Structures are given as C-alpha cells and as structure tokens.
Length: 636
Image 1: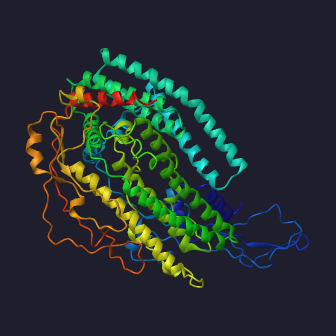
Image 2: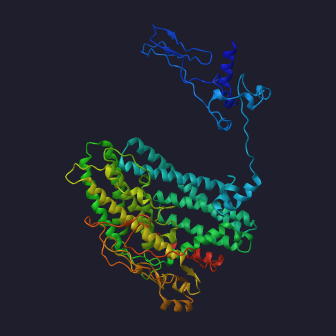
Image 3: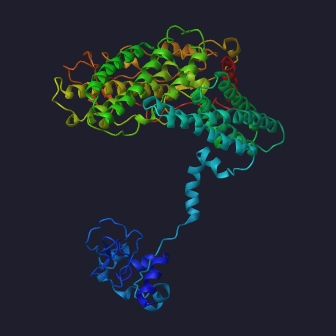
C-alpha cells in the first residue's frame, strides 16, 4: 500500500486526534463518492477528480437495473476553524502557520503534515465550588435526599416501585384521553396492557408500603438513630405520595386512598415525637413540613368563596360549544383540522361535564356552613379524583395548525385558560380538599400563560364568510380576558390570606369540643363577586381586617387564625362605570401586565409580609396530622 492509502486508513480508524487532523485539508473525509454509477451494462466511469485526498466507496447495488444519474459527485471540502484560529489572526487553513507549536513536539501526536494548536483550560476550584453549591443543595430536602440515596434495602425498593407505578398510571391515563379522541384498536390494547399491569402492581406496592410503615413505626419506637429514621421517613413519604397519585389516576376506592394518607399522618406523628429532642428536629425536612403545615392550616381556615360565579362560567362555556358546532361544518372536508377540533371538543366536554356532574349539583345541595369542611369529604375526594383524570396536558403544548390555524389555536388556548381558572377557583370554593388530601385542584407549579401569546392573530383569520372571522377572534379574546382575570383574582386572594394570616394557637385546648365546627377566619371581611362578566373588581372584594372584631379575637383563647392586614386607602377614586366583557360594541381596556381591566382595583402588595410561625412547633405539627386523621376516617 502506498502512503496515501495508509494515511487514509489511519484517518478512518482514529478519532482521538480528530481535531488535529481536521485542521489540515490533506486529511478530510469527503461527503460523497468520487465515482458515479450507471446501469449494469455501463460499468463504472472514473471521475476526473479522483485524487489521493478522496475515498472510494463500493456499493452492493451498483449492478442493479436502475437508472442512476450520469454526473460526477465531486468531493466536498469544508473548513473547521476553531476559536484559537481567530486569536492567531487567520480565518482559514491556508493562513495557518506552523510556528504555533514546534514540529518536534507535534510529530509523535499526529499524522504527517498536521498542524496542532495548543489548547489551555482553566482549572476549576472544586473546593470553592462545593462551598458555593452546598447551601443551595441543602436548601431542598429532595436534593439532599438524592445525595444519600443508594437504592439498596426494602425502603429503597418500595420507593423505586412506587415511582414505576405512578409512571404507568399516568401513561395509561394519557393513553385513555387519546383514545377518547381517536379510537384505535392497537392503542387500546396497549392502554389495557399498561393499565392492567398498573392495577396488578398497585396492591403489591401498596401492601409493601403499609408493611414498611409498620416497620418504620417499630424503628421509631426502638433505638434506631435519628438520621436513619429521617432517611426512612423520606423514602416512605415519597412512596406514599406516589401511591396516592397512582390510586387517584386508577380510580381506586376512596377508602384505600384515605387509609394511605392517614397512615402517612400517623407515622409523621410518631416520627416528630421521636426526633423532637434531637438535632433532626431542626433539619431541612422538618422545616419544610412546618411550611406545609402552615399551608394546610390556611386551607381549613380560609373563608369559602361564594360559588355563584361557577354558574356564570358554565354559561360562558355554552357559547363556545355553539362556535365549535359551526366550525365543524366548515372543516368537514379537512381531516387533519377535524381531528384537531375533535380533540379540543373532547377536552371541552370533559370540562363542562365535570362542572355539571361533580360541582354545580353539590355546591348548594350539600353545603353545610356549620361543619368544619363545609362539604362532605366523600364529595371532595370524588371531585378531586375526577379533576386530575381529565387534566388536558396536550393543551399546554403548541399544537399543529392546519387550514384554519387561527381558530384552532385560539379555541385551544381559551379552553386551556378555562381549565386553569377553574382549578384555582375551586381551591377557594372547596379549600378543605387541599387540607385533607394534600392534592388541591390547582395544577402543580402553575404559571399562567403570557397574555401576549394569547391575543388572536387577525392575519390568520379569513374574511370571505358571511360573518368575518375577525369578529370571532375578538370574541375568543374576550373569553381569554375573562379566564385570565378570574385566575389572577383568585391567585391574589389566596396570596393575600397566605401572607397576612397568623396562627396564635392553631389547636387550642377547646378544640376537642368544637372539632367539627367551622374554623373560618372571623375578622376578615370580603364581598364576593357573583358575576365577573359585568362587575369590576372593587376594593371591598379583597379581604380586610375588621377592627371591631380584632381586639375581641385577641382575648378569645379558642380563636386560632387571625387576619392581620389593615384596609388601605386607594390613591385614586374607584370607577363606577359598568362593564360588560362580552359586549362587542364596547372596547375593553385590558392591561396585559396585570391581567386586570383598567377599571379593576389593584391592592398594594407588601414587599416583605411578616408571618408569625413561632407557635408552629413540633407539638403543633403532630396535632395538625392528628386532626386530619379524624376527618380522613370519614371517607368511605
């Protein structure tokens, strides 16, 4: 073999020094052959560009009776200019000078005639990096837990199995939603297999979890170290949470879900009693449970919001149904657009049927103002379970647009916003669900979509209809305004209570005698909005402190939650001008930065609210979980 062939083989089989090789034109792979092929009778014709710098490729199908173009494929050369090349003042291989490094130093490391360049890297200070990252890592107990997780032992096994179980439950639920839109026998069989596997594993994982809970309780009562107990409790807590979510998606019996949540409360009570006198009592995990307990106590004391606006929301959704029925006739000849519209309609009917069958029929019929949860725990769990099984995750992602891109995109965004608005609103109408089952109606890590992205693009709408689509675009935009405004109002309401509620004695001595009585904050006054379509948001629609009740509540030892925010004086006078969001003849002055109308009142947020958590010690946390167990026992 000649030297050119030897160099070509070295280039092909050596990758470790590819950077040095690619710096030279003499050693580069072409992207195509230097021959072209014709029919079997034509044979191969040599390309005029065949040189030692190109490679020849042989193909097994060169003798097939198929026409191939009779033109030569020239070898394509390209440049690889690196950052060091720009520092040296040249921008191509021809300008490179071999003076960057001596030939003696480079010869043993590369092929003949290569031009290596020196590369220097800054050494990281690992000690400083560790000191910098450690506080951030330890600030999150989950990350701190993963540092110590070794995947060995029965506790680790049940944690891993619970993660697999919840994954199968979520996947089977997503496949079921897809089958509601496009029925397919193959996909149905896959969904049945996945769900069957999840249902078979569910009792196994659940029984293992309950058995380990008893083992963990026995370890708490023994001489097991506090740090080992913390590690075991973290595994059991995460596994219990995964099993709870999986049972919700698999439509498991309410009693089983309540039992797992109740058992988790029981082990936390024993865990806190065992570690209360050790250094673990001030650990990150316990601090996070303090924050969690504060949030739970808020949802059992927050005043329930008047549910009249839910009927208004249902009426607004009826107008969207008529719009989709009209567009169905227009898209009948476009299969792809019809499939997209059919998917949106399925999510729409899931939303409206949930309102009709799980909420509106019960918000007044089963309401009991004298009971601590106001609504029966069974009703709360049934609504919660149905809500999480219809969450339309596909609406979050950008969909594929077809012949009617403007309408399909905007109607999808509108329905998605209604899902968001209803979720956060139900946490104010049915707050006890979050207190009892930890899982509320508001979506996890929810951040409302940017208003600028939701404004309809009129250029995508057609105007050759009897009723131009531009009017439809403005109508959908007003639906988006309604949903975003509703979401923002309830988000600010929950934030207002969270930042201005203090617990002077969350579980007083008189609690056993009034365990099932209402616990709503008694010194907060707010006038509910029953119609968001035609009423602007006023100052009195936000909670304010009742001064005449405040001093009396401070003297009452049975009162545990007190609202501390004073009423503020607005800088400008409130507008009395009426509004009608769906009056197309009147323009709407919507502020995208605040997601409110200009006529709406915006309270001044306290940049540093002060919340007194001094009374939320370990004893209070144990009482908090004991209180939840009492109500979970009523779930049947």
